[in-house]
Length: 289
Image (cartoon, rainbow, N blue to C red; front, side, top):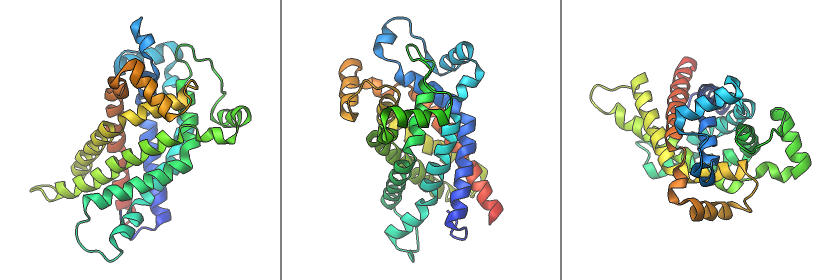
């Protein structure tokens, strides 16, 4: 991140880039959440959702095209807070760990550690927006009645019926997920970009940003998918007592592969999300330099 741009500037640029990427890729995220919440019991009969395109088509056909953007308001709320903080804090935290006057390539370990810290801090603040987003995305699947009339109603209803602390439901798997995914995304993007620009014929260009963004998305999904499934189930279904109950019940009744449900749509989602976000971020940063 550019040192000549203030933290407030980086925060605003990061939040804008994250919101744009969120809007473009939310249908894939909605499909991913529906696939992750689909239990083996449903799979044993006639599966309502089959694959990425099938899930998108089913949602659009049964609930309307706009249903693919369910949760867009809390999704944008989330990216304004989470996206702005995790990216805005990354460079200052990384500089803190290695020293402000450090010269040379920063180690991968320092990048990963800095991204873990910023991801955890950012999602601890933004968890309520994530909860509401998942709750709204879950509506419409089999056996799930409509409970909320939009994002604001969801926030108010959850607080009224479940208490203020309920807005931080799933905080443990969510911190684990987002700290891990943030480390996989930011650290890998940072590191891959460094490697790519050193290759013959490559510069700090759009192609470099695209390749590094795709790599960041792949690492993020591969590493974060199990905690992502637990997080989605904790937030979208109230049958679990806690994080460990969700994890062990899923493992016991559905097997280890259940933790990679929705892997393909998740990769399409995070791969395209990272490409759009990092391309937008880099271009806007260049504009303000």
